[in-house]
Each structure stands twice: as structure tokens, then as C-alpha cells.
Length: 342
Ligand code: KG4
Ligand code: ZN
Image 1 (cartoon, protein in one colour):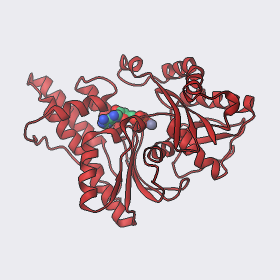
Image 2: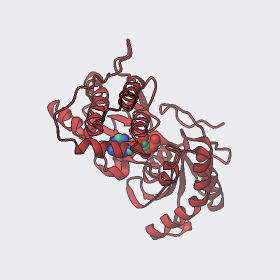
Image 3: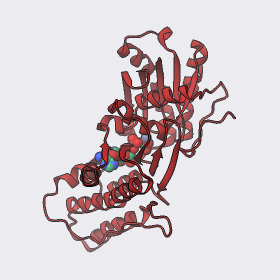
Image 4: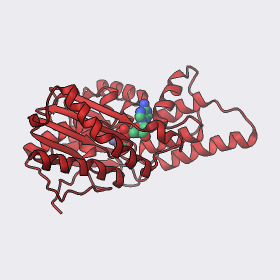
């Protein structure tokens, strides 16, 4: 089954062609990051306008790369939630007209389910159930993937997402946008002994698998502002190294503990922050100690792309999920909720 998939939930416009879910024939991504970097973060209105300019060209490019024509497409999959509503609507509108014009089914896909599905592309042998650490610009969750289309949230952030925290800290340290890759690079360059900046690991009373990043973010902002006010030099490499470790310490032990507690013997990672080298290394060490299998997709599949949407779309299709021309974008939607007709 050949699926043309569209992704436009944030600042990447993407189109892909997948065969039977896991085989990627084309995966075209246009990142708007440089445009948003001028403003230090994603400007929703600009994102929508850029998606409109790019979406049809990317779909054409995906078909060309895959070496197929429009009549070879069996279904259209599209990210319909969660994300920036104006941005989502561009992809949803394009997908609806494509499905209608071609007379093929339209499959609505939850963006975070798509991130998890990136693992199926990278690891052909992987099948649910497994536990997934899902960490992106908007979400930080420990999710049980119990089947291809049923998910349970075991832990989640009570405030900021891990990626949001990376982006904010990078902004305050003058490292640009998107902040995650810049912080990762600087932290990796630090070769000195770890410096104790007294960074907090957020805890939520009575919810041991939940996390919180707003306190950590505030402490870093204060450290940076204090240094400026006192005219002191700040060792940004040491600070980003300690910060990356604090984020990893908030996520990795909880993920391992959740796997043991809920009986999962496989752990996967998903989302943009899953590209972080500290988190990846700490997970590897912890999983090998506890004899848990670990799945870490390559960086390109961790970031937003449409192949992951096509892959999850295939499994949603097999489970009977279809949308009609009344499909709408939804800005906020739990990963646990399947698609419901309006
Ligand atoms: O999944 P994603 O591409 O988009 C969303 O669905 O949000 O995630 C983007 C987030 C950004 O916050 C970005 O700074 C972060 O992922 N990110 C990283 C790294 N690469 C991207 N954070 C930490 N380390 C990285 N290497
Ligand atoms: Zn994403």
C-alpha cells in the first residue's frame, strides 16, 4: 500500500511516500527554522504562510523521488493534531483536496504517534508493546505503546516540555534557535570536570513518573542574568553540559523505572529532543545495565518529517481509521485519543 503523507504541524513542511508503512520511498522536508531564528522562536503566522508556499512543491518532489505518479497513491495520511492550528490547517486542507481529487482514503494521524512510529522505520523488527520516551518541542511523556494504535501516558511534564526548555535556555545564553542542537554541540565540546550549578530535578508529589522543567529553566535564566549583572564571565560550555545532564537525569531514570514497573522489556525514544547525545548515551548505559532493549532512531527520523506520519498512517488505516472532508486540525489532543468524527 502506497501512502502520500503530509506534515505541517510546526515549522517543518514535509511530504513523504511510504510503502506498507515501513519502507520509505521519499521523505522530503523543508525546514523554516532559519526564518523563525530571526525572531528567536516559531512565529505561527509565518509558519502557516510558508507551509502554503511549500506544501504542493514538496508533495510533487516526494512523488518524483519515489518515482511514482499520482494514480499510484492508495491513500493520503496527514498530521491533524496536535500543533499550531494555522499550520496544521494547511496540511489538512491540502490532504483533503488531494484525497478527494484522487478518490482515495484520507487518514488522520496524531503527530506524537507519528514520532513513535519513526522507530518502525528505523527498526524493521520492532513491534509493540514497548515503552517510549517521547520528547519534543511541545511534549515530554513516557508512553506505553501497547499496540500500533493504543497508547497510555505513564508520565508527563507538568509544565514546560524538554524541547521548550532547551530552546529557552539557548535563547538566554545567546545560542540562537532552535536551541537543542546548539546546546548539544556546546555541551559536547566541554571537556572539564562537571561543575555543580545546583540545578534542580523537578518532582511532582504523588506522581513519580511526571516531570517538571520550569524550575530548571528559571534557575538557568537566573544564573545567566546574575553573571551579566555582576559583569562575570559565564562558562557556557560547563553550564550547557550541566543543564543537559539535568534534563537527562529528569528523564532517563524515570523511563527505566517505568519500564521495570510496568513490565516493558523494550524502550524506544521519539521526538526532536531524542536526538540529544547526553540522553542517548545515558539511556544506552542504563538499558544495558538493566538488560532492556533500546531503540534510538537516527537523528533525521527524530526530527519532524512526513515518513513517520505515513508509517503511523498505515497502521491507523489497518485499524480502520478514516476521515472525511470534515476533517479539522486540532491544536491540543492527547496521544491516547483516537480520531473521532466531528
Ligand atoms: O519533534 P520536534 O522536531 O518538533 C516538535 O514536534 O516539537 O522537536 C523540536 C525540538 C526543539 O525544541 C529542538 O530544540 C529540540 O527538539 N532538539 C534538541 C536536539 N535536537 C532538536 N534538543 C536537545 N538536543 C538536541 N540534539
Ligand atoms: Zn514533532
